[in-house]
Length: 381
Image (tube, rainbow, N blue to C red; front, side):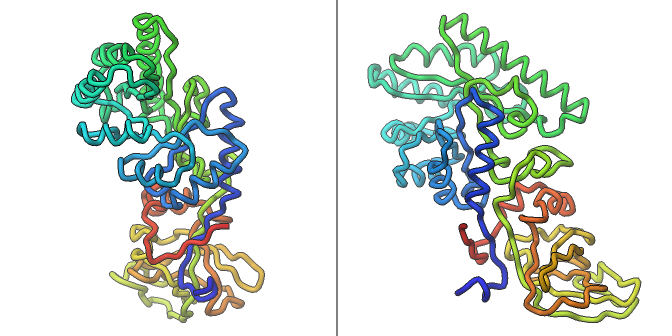
C-alpha cells in the first residue's frame, strides 16, 4: 500500500537521527558514546536505528538495551558494536549467554554478584570480559548501596582481563529549575563521585564511569565522565520538563501523520464525541482525523492539544476538540475554508514537537513514541 492510501503513518528521519548524534558528540567531545536503543529504539525501530547510527561518522562505544531478548536480537545483526545489557542477567544461564556473545551485563545486586563470581571462579582466566557495576546513588531502583558497591567492585576487579565501568542514574536531572530536583541531583553526583574516588584508592587504578543520560549530557557537563548514554535526545525530544528538543538544537526523528476523513458543521450548543466532553460555544467546523488510541495516539489528550493541517500548501495549526476515540480524533477547522477531505494532519514531529503534544496529554514524549502501534506503517527516509 502506498503512503497516499494509509489512514495513518509514521516517518522516521534517519538523517535527523544522525544529526542529533552529532549534537551529542559536540557536547561531550571527550566521552565515549553508548546510544540507548531499548524498547525498539523508543518506538523508532531498533534495527534501522542501530544501522543508521553505526553508519554515522561518530564512533560508538556500544549500544544499550534493557532486556536480554533485545540484546540477543541486536547481536544477531552482527553490527560489530558492543552491547550493554542495562537490566543485567537473572541467573547463571543468562549470564552464560551474555559471556558467550560478549554482551556486557550491568550488575546491580548481590544475587547477580554471586552468580557472576561463581562463573568467573570456574573460568578465572577467561579474559576479555566487560562488566558494568550499578551504584545506587539515591534513585533506589537498581544498584548496590555505597557500602556494597565498595565491596562488589573490587571483588570483580580482581579477575584478570576484566574491564569494569562504574555507573549510576540521575533521578531528577530533567527538572533542574526546581530547587528540590537540583539539590537531589547534586547530592547524587557527590555520592557517586565519592564512591569513584574511594574505589580508585581501593583498587589503585583508574575507574571509568558513566552517569550522564540525555539530561546530564545537555545540562551537567561534570557528569560526562568516560561514557555517556544518550537516549531521548537522539530521537529529537528533550529530557527536560517544559522544554522541547528544538530548544536544544535537536531535530525530530519521528513524524506521525493521519488524514482528514470527514468535515462536519456543528451548531452552537452541539456536543462532540464520547462523553460530550466538548460543547461548541459557536457554530463550529469540525474535522474528523483518521487516528486514535488504537494507533498509539494518547487517549488522555486534552481539548486544545495542537495538530497541524496541511492544505493547499499551507500548514494550519489548530486543536483537538472532544475525546480521543479508538480510531479517530476531532479537530477544530473553524475559519479554514480551504481544507478538504484527504488533507494530511501532523500529530507530532516536523513542525510540531512531541514534547508539546505530550504535555497536553499529561505524559512525556518517551511514552508517545513507545506507544506507537503495529497497525501504523513506518517509513524510513
